[in-house]
Each structure stands twice: as C-alpha cells, then as structure tokens.
Length: 266
Ligand SMILES: NC(=O)c1ccc[n+]([C@@H]2O[C@H](COP(=O)([O-])OP(=O)(O)OC[C@H]3O[C@@H](n4cnc5c(N)ncnc54)[C@H](O)[C@@H]3O)[C@@H](O)[C@H]2O)c1
Picture 1 (spheres, helix red, strand yellow):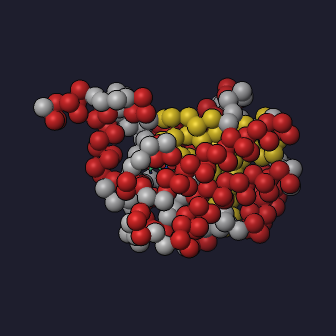
Picture 2 (cartoon, rainbow, N blue to C red; picture 1 turned 180 degrees about the horizontal axis):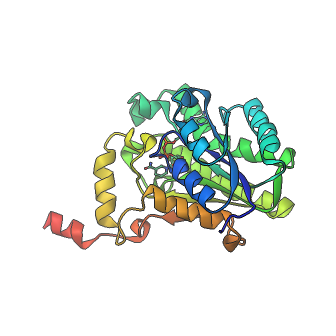
Picture 3 (cartoon, rainbow, N blue to C red; picture 1 turned 120 degrees about the vertical axis):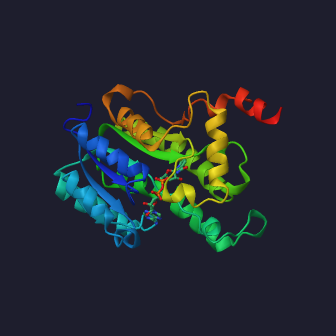
C-alpha cells in the first residue's frame, strides 16, 4: 500500500464524478487516513457523507476562500487525524462568469475576483495557513488541479484560464518556500477534459472533450487515472518532484495535429 500510515486532507468531492471523489477512494485503498472538505453549500447535497462512510473519513465544512474556515478545517483535521498531515489535495474551481454565461468581452469584475479567489488564491491560503500552523509533516505533498488553458487559449474557458495561470504561479512560488521550510513538495496536475460537474458546466465542453480525445495519442485521461497520478504524487515515490505543472493528458499538450483530425478535414 503506497500511502500506508499517511494522513491528509482532500477538498472538492461533490459527487461520484468529481476527481476528488476518485482520489479519496484510491487514497483509502492505499491505506491513508484523511478528512474530506467542501463548501457548506455543497455539503447540503449530502452525497459526500456516503463517501465519508465508505472511507472511514470525517467531513468538515469549509469555504476555502475563508481564512477562518481553513483554520477551523486544520484544527478539526488535527483532532481527527491525531497529528500533522502528509498530503493535501486542492480540487476546487468555480467561475461565476462562466456559470452565468458572461462572455469574456463582458466580464463582471466582481465575479472575476471571485473566480480567482475560489480557484487559485484559495490554494495560497491553504498553504499559508498550513505553514503558519505548522501542520505539514516533513516530505509532505500538496497537489492542485489545473488545465492547459493556463498556457493556450480555449475561448470557452473564459476567466478560468486566468485562474489556472495564477494557480500554477502560486504552485511555483509556494513550492519554493515550502521546499525550503519543510521539504514539502507542491505541484499541479494539468488534467484532460473530464466529465464532472465543473467540467461539463463549461459551454462547448462536449466539443473540446471530443476534440482532445482525437488529438491525444493515448486518449483523454479520466478521473480515475487522475486519481492514480495523485496517489503517486502523495507517495514517497515522487519525493523530488516539486514546483511543476505536470501534464496528465494522454499527450495532448505536445501534439500539433493528429491523423484523426487530418482525416476529419480531408
Ligand atoms: N473536469 C475537467 O474537465 C477538469 C479539467 C482540468 C482540471 N479540472 C479541475 O479539477 C478540479 C476539480 O474539478 P472537478 O472537475 O472534479 O469538478 P467538481 O465540480 O466535482 O469539483 C469542483 C469542486 O469545487 C468545490 N468548490 C467550489 N467553490 C468552493 C469553495 N468556495 N470552497 C470550497 N470548495 C469549493 C465544489 O463544491 C466542487 O466540489 C477543479 O480545480 C477543476 O478546475 C477539471
């Protein structure tokens, strides 16, 4: 078992399609003990309790834009886990502009700030409060989830592209800091389009899901495969990987054009 004896915190499991849900299931199978967290509004759906029971976990409500909520999440996790943590998953993203179909040339700037706060600055907050509270074990591992719209333009991704660029920048800056202070590594996984609530909420999602499938020599990576990658990054097998944005996309990011796409346009 790759995570035997390890303790952690997993955010973002909304339902069984969520990437974080699959990560929690795999962490449990690999012997980890962890708490689950999501925004109070998401907890009202009640689904996460099923996951918690299955994984002998505890659910702690936290809006990850709130410093107080994160502080409370760490206090309660410490009680449940009986000590410091070895891994943290940040699997959180939301854009009010995308959700309310505000197009990129007509952004609501208050909502843009919310997008950045929920989808990127919350990652910084989680790490800053973890560092201040000294909750990270030596050689711990922190993972966030990103998308290639941080590097290339995908028009329908709108202001989430800015959020992902910021998320990846925070990964480098805080990865440097935590590497020095407690040998903690910080990475993002840049995941293929994946059919989840957040994913399919984006207009045109199905089209770019299918396009990515045809552009990737290995095909799109699904949520379970992403969970396996997270297990590797939380395990001791990845101790010297830090400050990276790691593409987990079946080869999409390095493909110019595929034969499938050529055939389609011939
Ligand atoms: N699905 C995709 O195509 C895809 C591709 C690449 C990266 N990602 C990223 O993966 C991560 C997980 O998304 P998912 O696809 O599993 O979708 P999801 O909708 O299942 O997960 C997003 C989670 O964010 C939570 N959340 C939103 N606001 C929050 C807040 N203020 N505080 C705490 N939690 C909050 C939601 O409740 C939800 O559980 C996100 O960062 C997303 O951008 C998704």
